[in-house]
Image (cartoon, rainbow, N blue to C red; front, side, top):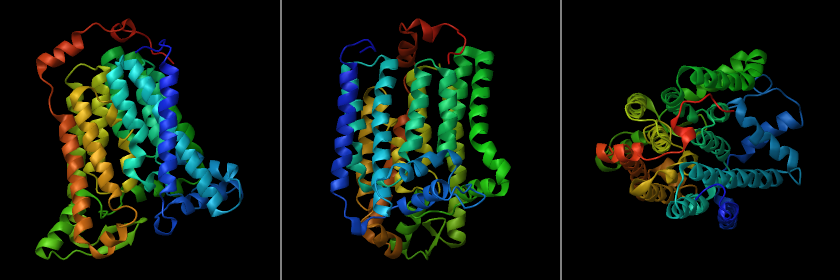
Amino acid sequence: MTAEHPLVVVVAALAAAVFVGSWVIVQRRVDPGREIVDTPVYESYGEAVVSRHEVPYRDFELEYPPGALPAFAAPSLIQPEDSPVGYKRAFGWLMGACGAATVVLAVATLLGLGAGWTRFAAALAFAALWPLALGPVVLTRFDLWPAALTLGALAAFVAGRDVVGSGVLAAAVAAKLFPAVLVPLAALWVWRRRRRRALLACAATFAGVLLAVFLPFLVLSPDGLVGSITRQLSRPLQIESLGAAVLVAFHDLGGLDVHVDSSHGSQNIAGPVGDGVGAATTGLQLVALLLVWIAFARRPATAERLLRYAALALVVFVALGKVLSPQFMIWLAPVVPLVAGRRGLAASGALAGSLVLTQGWFPYRYWDYALRFDDHVAGLVLARDLLLVALAALLAWPTGRAHERARTTAPARPDRTRPALPRS
């Protein structure tokens, strides 16, 4: 399919409408009395900025980077009623719009790849329906905002708009730090295809956007901004992470002494054991990410490989981190289904299983796990975490060299094969 095909707009609109329909179904199935939501915290941020005109980090403590503020402030501006219910409703529809935007961006990315009808159908079906698999957490977390920005950056890179992609990627990092794992891939992509001058232009754009977002708050409250970031990076071993799930399994099976402590807005494994496992998993995560970046650098910088390794970097970051909150699954849903071929179909299946397993305990059975280490729920958490590791292995599994050569030597569009100045 090409961008000029008469059905492109129809396909994009239909897929976005199906996403909204999935969103509505999830909303109607929610049990309000058993939800675990972050919207009251977001509302406090929005009201502080919109109603009291306070400066984040200086006048009140903000847990997230400054690029997240639009997601918190906008519902305070548009909510139909001055109440938590009104804010939650407005916030939910704002995130629904971000989700619909990811569907449209998926269409743009697939067009840039020259995908066929079968691939379009498979990828867009996942993109439109995945909220049904993950459940209520998607309604009350702001992660669709940075996820949409991340996919927007990838769509721009695939289209050859490297300067635009660099700026949007910076905005994604400014909204939530996780897209930073894609920065080395983006730098390698630009360097391998367009060399030094283009890389400098993209680096300047990336740095300029970050400075534009962070610098005002750094000037007004350096301690508050730096403290917000360091608190995120210094979080303890959260109970849903792989390391914690293994410790809970040893607790249930072998009587390992494991204690839970609440801090940093989550429940975590306390004590030296938790600290040690957290440090070990962080080290493993960093090594795995380094290997992902090196593997991408060793083969041709094609658009298909960029998407595959972007998905892999995100999965590795989530699966091996010392924190794995349920909303982190939102980061993966827009990107993984875009991976090509049978690998992509298998990866989408593994991700769908991970989403369903997450909904199996969150939010309605979360406290059974966090407070009592319920055996059944602990098994679901461990199964989800191991399935994410399997998903990472599936994405990392080497492609045969002959197949790789065939894919990279196939005729390509001229603007992707000849050196060119960066396009903005």
